[in-house]
Length: 534
Image (tube, rainbow, N blue to C red; front, side, top):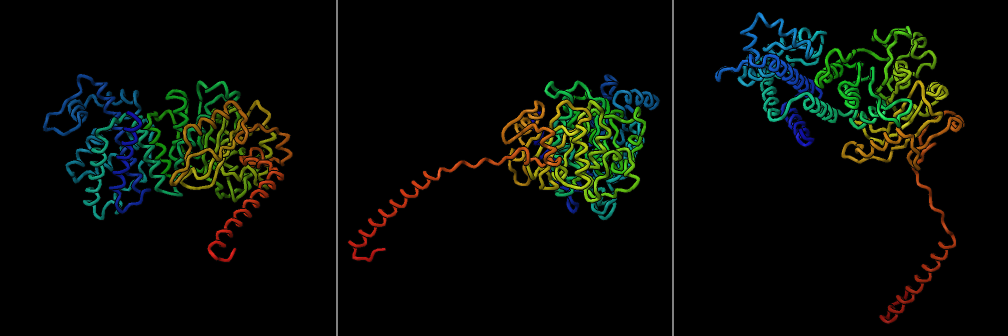
């Protein structure tokens, strides 16, 4: 599928969403739209695997039989179903009962079946609890099929769901629906819903351009980025993963088999479910990722609470776009927490460094961490200054990248990317001031491919360029009291030209002379007209 076709698929789906959501706001309808797209992917993938497995035994329904072919096979081969499903599980890691396949649900919707609503409810429960080897409980918990926003009565809600399913099915019928295409369409819709959500979008969506910068940086060799990309990452972590797009971008950089395990954590239940669906929809098996619903700052994920250094999770790549200047409740117990004990607690008013230290704790010695933060972390005083100073003295801050303003749906403030490493070769800090390199958009500014390439190439080869990038020694940073304000080191201001005062004086004299001559000529004309001079 071409980029143009993909864009058209996204626009088709968005148009359907915009037409059908009625009284619902974009956030509510997002959950229905994306869940049905997810169900469509699971069904298509399962039916394709079944057809490939059964080959000549795959039935062809009679002309007047609207059932899915797989439903016919299940009905005629009930005794063989358990063995068949066990075999398919080994291949694609899940199964779906024919009653809950997209094709079966579409047939109910197309014929305005009064039982569609109840069938969907059973189908969602089935997928959560029985489809996969590991349970995905609560995967559809944010979808209220009995919401009055769908209709006041069960009959009205059933009718609305029939319409939604039918429109989606018919809208995407002409497009390819393999995992890459539906996955990209899913990402497109998340972006569109984010645009319509305004400030709420920051909870679940990192613009793809920024995801690409972070993912390209962390997949390069950490000790010598100029040698290129790592062959493999054992694991990658995003501790504020939102809908998972940043993690998937890292996977895209490495290829489908380039990462051993993907870890993500998300506090918001709706967004957590989006992330789990997003992973599966992009073709990941349930054994290839682990997304946890919980609070990163209190570290309530048992996997990350291991205090034995030999057993501690160590990730080759850590990426994050945590909430900016999030207010939190640091306490005495957190002060003794292994993540913060050696650096100190971030202030109550801004958890930025708490998020950073959390991710940094789980970074391997050969890994790279890239995190998006507000500029305040570069220069704020108090305990943040002490944390920043220790990170610098210990040689952990590798690169500071200043980005243009208004790149996010959720805020117009300019942000920066901090690149950190446990072990780094250069004894300086690279500053990249990319604040003026962007394309202006109607609602948001955006980075073009050449802007992204320039940032990544500058980091990769540690290049210096006037008014753009510079390697700064620790001695100079120390003289600035460990303040990392980018403009102190790389100013984008153009130097004022020297003014030749004698030349300016001569030009002014020449101008005054010409003015006098012109006034004299003007008065001559007035005299000829018997008018008084001016």
